[in-house]
Image (cartoon, rainbow, N blue to C red; front, top):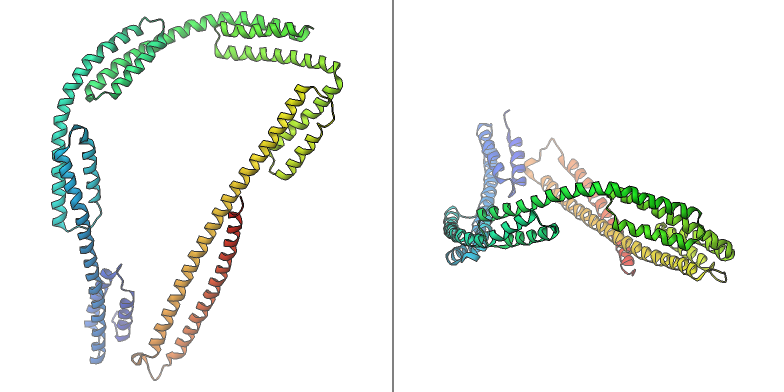
Length: 478
């Protein structure tokens, strides 16, 4: 497609307008291509002269941005050189004078300095020089490490000759000792000694493997004991179960509550003396607990008949207290729940009840008061934090929207200025065309758009003020 004066001028104006630090290289390539089209276009002298001037302006702007970037690079490179040079020198000094205990820290420091080279601006020669010095530090540390490792190996052999007999003795004990737990603990202690000792990898691995042999032997022996234990446990099940069956029969029929309780306690004690599998122990213990519960119920029924009014009051208030306690744990209606607790509390006044029963229920009710108070405090604290976080988020969002609207208004006024300059430019006027009407229309549209955005900003500021008032209100709540 052949270019003419107007199309070339429009593209040059656009290129000049859009040229920035982020795209000036791409714009330069576009200008070079436009220059080729410019040479091919059919233009009169004045048109060619004007377009050539526009080309010069665009290239000047591109070159200016290039120089700015170059200056920024050189400045950043110099600052990075000033920052890294003392660190590299420090790394060299650390490497040169590091003792065995300092080698790890010195090496890590070199690594940290090395990381700082990544992604930063530096003159090539400076980067190579500094990196070469840092490599010298690494080489020095490698040499010292190798020497240190040789010395450590010698020291490790000496420590091994000290600790190995202890380990071998414990491994031997693991095969025969009655108190396997004691041997196990001693193996753990010597294992910790090996972990803390300054040993070479090979010596440490050898000693740890030997210790593991002791653990393995103990595990195998424990498994054998487990098998024997299970055999004994199967025999004990029948004995304990017969005792429980007797206890169940007594709990269901005996009138001597004290005798039943004493017998059930003796069965409970028998659990400690008999070996039982966990599954059997839990199953039998549940039955024992059920027997306890049976005799307790029967005993309660007996005393209920003797003291009907006290028991009736207890039985009437207990569900109320338990329900109130449950409500205090779950209800979010704190005020109504507290009022309900007070009503339940009022039920205690002037009624007969055993002291222990009254204490039990009243203590439970007091716990309910404590729970509802604590839950209410936690709820309002959490709600306060959540609301303040939400308001902060809304205020931040409004600030972003206001900033965006202000940027759009600035762009609208830049466009208005550009259109106004275009309307007064004699180069684009033509006797047969009246562009001013169209330009004025565009200007009016942009002004209306800016006015609308200013109103949006005013509305957003009002919203922000309301949110700030709401936030202050919650901040003042203790």
